[in-house]
Image (tube, rainbow, N blue to C red; front, side, top):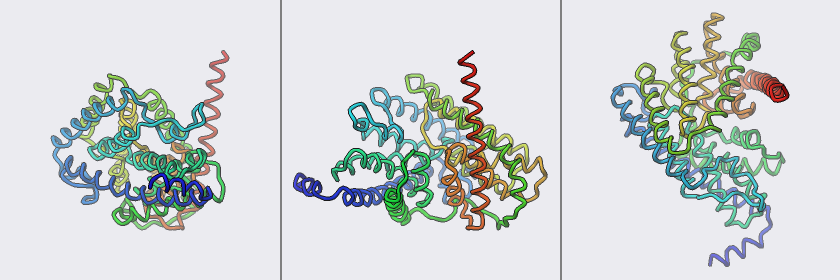
Length: 424
């Protein structure tokens, strides 16, 4: 029966098979988003006695001892899990899955270990790890694209395209941002643009988001005041870019180094628990450092004093970097979003801006643009996270592209510095 079905599929035109494969991938990715949502809530309930959907701040009303115990358990278990997962098998990133080997085929992946690796990221974030959750659904979407591509007997090039579609579908499912996820695929995965590919990626992301939408709300993640946009924000743009972009560029550079030098050998059994212990110590004074950055961003939107904002910025950047270097895996979208807000908040204190909310949002799009190197994706994510209307788009887009240009300039300057050092 299976052989007959595969034989029948081989006779289908490649374009038809690709459409059918993207539809199946969208359905699967949407269901994956639902499962991950329930898994995250389950872990949060066990760790903190409540979920982030039941309260504005996950740690509100939770004792220090419970927070510390949860982080210690998550740190120890994560160290053991990631140590054994990587002993004899390589864990692939999405870009790693898209690489072609010498034999002309994608790398061989241990699908069950790769799947468990992605699921554990959700468990770690739910237990308080200070990193993002979006890596897991993107990785699982890309992972399921592989067998789906084989089922439909797609050629290698189309299978790789399907993997990229799966990454976008996973992001669309958990954050309910289907259009932004299309931009994300083309901007961050280096996918060559064509109208055909744009439509197929969109088919996958919109289907995935709608399936997951039966459970995952498409409402804004943050409680926002009523905003009024004006050209005053644009007058502050040069100062904002000069302040936030270098911070984001430095954070992004350090993040790459932390990822490259991530501990994977036996030392992870010591480094990762110690990093979570450090996070627990800081959380005694600043509990909103925990999780993917949602609590920190909401705290900034609600209003904080300059000293608190400065410490939140420094500590959040530090715990994200140290956690990744110590051996953990996870996303950086929402941490970057909150760090951008904090950088803009510091500028607003310096300039004496009375109602800085719009400036905070421009800071977040600055930071996201630089860390992602994706201005359209960064703009779409800020809109999706906050529920902003179309009036905000010109301001966000201009800010994103100015920040992107400045970041490219910093890249060129840094490359010149390294070249000069090597030649001397």
